[in-house]
Image (cartoon, rainbow, N blue to C red; front, side, top):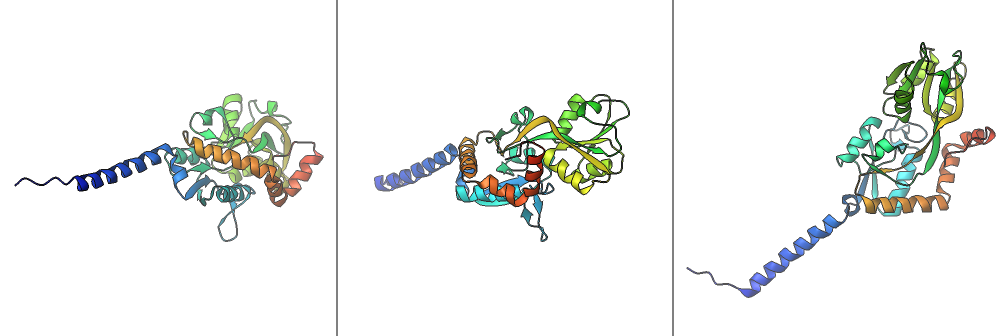
Length: 272
């Protein structure tokens, strides 16, 4: 039996298909993160006062507040995903994260894998040295008999791997373990950023010295997947407005007031 063809039915079905195709096309034209109401932000919660946890284990710190302010500006719910530092970029590239806000230095090597926002903080590499070590500058490290400790995946690690040929290089996963090597006199120096070096020296004044003058200037940025251009524009617009409205100054006063005063006395450029 021949079925009757209904023009009205065919037209309605065609309109439905067309609407679905248009919807799918619109989704393809917008970054994935933009059509979601949640942004998953990766950070390693082991880097106070930027990334850490409170007494109840909840995320806390400068980067956490920055992420939450970004969420408010974009109308997105923020979910913090605690991830080891060397696992952040792989997680971003595979879509497990939408952004990385984890005191991450912008480097040419990292830019080959991910995009970065405009810089939001300036810092530099310096040294935490054992109190009895003869080391006075980074040039003193590249010698036989010297032990240099670094944290895996950091710019300190990259610097040491490229620049230091004659010393023994010790690569550890945790900042605390690296500091302990210096405190116990097992390592001559720990290459790390200014803020952390200052804090680690403050906790261990009897056994360490802080050489805070940076030998390599660095900047931190928010990392995004390549191709998330719309989200990158939104993040950069937020950072500009947040700075103009004194947001970074407030974060500095809340978490880094003592350090700000100390760095001003030492005539070092403060971070934000």
